[in-house]
Length: 197
Image (tube, rainbow, N blue to C red; front, side):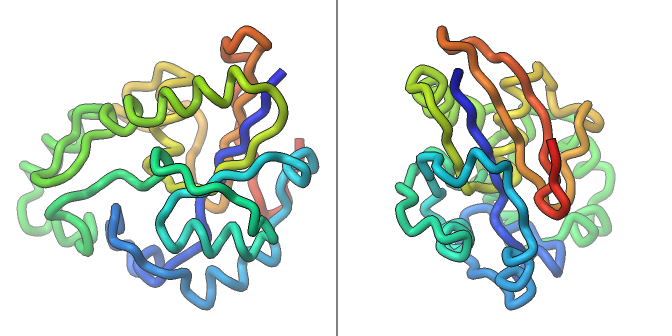
């Protein structure tokens, strides 16, 4: 069996301001650096092979978790939000509510000018997930919400229209288990603050 824990990076200033970060390479906020000390990951991740997005906020999170051995995996980089990066959804909706609602309703095919669709993110990470599934053992990947949502969509068939069957909010990790032949065995969430399971 193969196990993979997909963990979202800690909080940045842009997270606190609810700004779309995408590929903008923001560091962790002091609040984010502090919150990592309260996180509790599944016990099996202690000896897991570690991976990280190339973006600073993920690499800093890995370092704060003591995972200086984390290998950079370009596939784990956040979804690009194109011309929306640095903006908040509230600002965008206030400027053109009808257009933004139509874009949000497109689910996996939401495409912002200059950006990347969730479907493209899913296609980008599918080979990474397949390699992990076929490699066996335990793996920890420090990444981003957009990547975790795309992985969840691949694992569950969720089309990103409406709310996901599992609430992908707050400090959390997505746990995927694969059979020896690479087939998905289980999908669940792990709340990193007071996590259990």
